[in-house]
Image 1 (cartoon, one colour):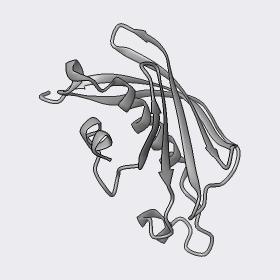
Image 2 (image 1 turned 60 degrees about the horizontal axis):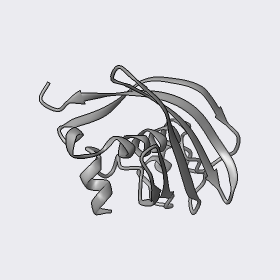
Image 3 (image 1 turned 180 degrees about the horizontal axis):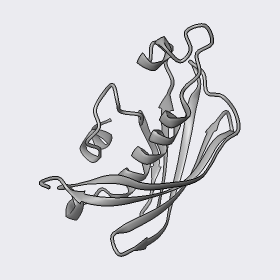
Length: 139
C-alpha cells in the first residue's frame, strides 16, 4: 500500500488500487478488492449492487498512472485525456477481486497510450484504451 500511496494522488474513498501484483517499466498488474461496504453500492444499486463501469475504468486509470511514477515525475499527476474502445463484458459485484492489467503501448510528446484489461476469476469483465498526460502539480 505504501508504494500505491506514494505513486497516486488519489486517496480513499477514491482510491481504486489495493495491491500491486507485478510492475515492470511498461506494464502493471494490480488488484481491487471489491467490498460490500463500498460507498457507491448504497446507490448503485441497493437491491442489486453492481460496481459502476466508470469506476472500473478508474481502476485502470490509477493503475496506468503507477507505471509513470518515478523520481523525475514525482511532482506530476497523470490525467486522463482520452478513453476509447471501452467494452463491458460482465458485472462486478461485492466480494469480487478485480485483476487489472495495464500496458503502456506508446509514448509520444507527453502523451502516454495505454491498453487495459480487467478480470474477475480469469474472466474478462472490461477492456479499454486510454491516453494520459502528466501535468505539473504546481499548475
